[in-house]
Image 1 (cartoon, one colour):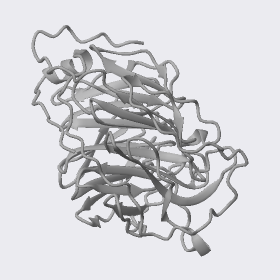
Image 2 (image 1 turned 60 degrees about the horizontal axis):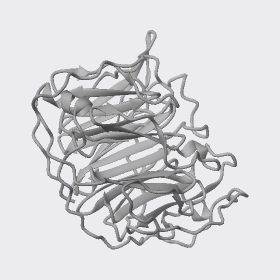
Image 3 (image 1 turned 120 degrees about the vertical axis):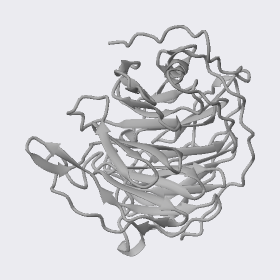
Image 4 (image 1 turned 30 degrees about the vertical axis):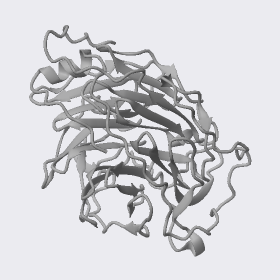
Length: 417
């Protein structure tokens, strides 16, 4: 999907992000065929799904300005854990596996479901777990770009590639060096202990990060050997670790930013570097998410706060935007429009130069409460939000937004508490 980008430089970037109204021409949206998979689809879940299996069927969403009423798609055993939309008629959601974070610890094969602008397809298996050949994936994450190319990754280091119609069998990344253990890391089998994120800049490049500080990049169809990032704990070097979901975002194949705990990791096209996050140095628990629409410009959320980075200015002081806390998703399709979501189904939006109050758009998940909220905006005209239980809603802009103003802007808002 082609989205026009506007060149905004220097200090004007942070002014646009924090004070300008939502704007940018709408994207040219192309209908894609709903995906199927080439992986086996007959394997059964490795344990019994929860007793409270939803009895609803996938419900079509009628496009309306603003947020639609929530509808439901049947979640896989393990729940939905990630969402990526290429357009307003083509979204893919990954889920299943073993997240060890829902009430019943239900487990199933890794699956992908597609949305065609109205309803969801039945989930199709991309990661079978028959006969104990491979452990189920942990909190799978999906990233798609027009082409199309989609990459599914998970916290156990497995990856699968698809073009919207076929999927490669899941393959494990090469073993990474094993750093000294972080005493804060509880190891596999604990809620939020193994998660991963992926971002694809184009059909030839993606970046992977997990919450134990492992990093890898995809070039064509080949993943690099993962490297591991370490951190300091008192007088010792330990593995970098964050309990909860992590984030990564690539604006192009030579610029990516990931966040793990209180550490920022930046890719320059050949290597990763580290720097301090805007959060407190001890922030090794709780979800983080980041969105970088333009190289060097990123918006990140953690807890109740948002922070913005622009070239030459570094990260702004965290600004309080959601009293509910547990912000775990953010997406900025343009420099002037951002959406962020919390784990309870609330959305906050950058609009008119400030963040709106939290708006409840999908129910708080019950069965898969530990899967987090997924959010994707392929343009400033359309967004979708999805929780682990399969509740989802879509947002449509009321009218095409006007051009971004880059002069005579009001001063940037003062940071909140």
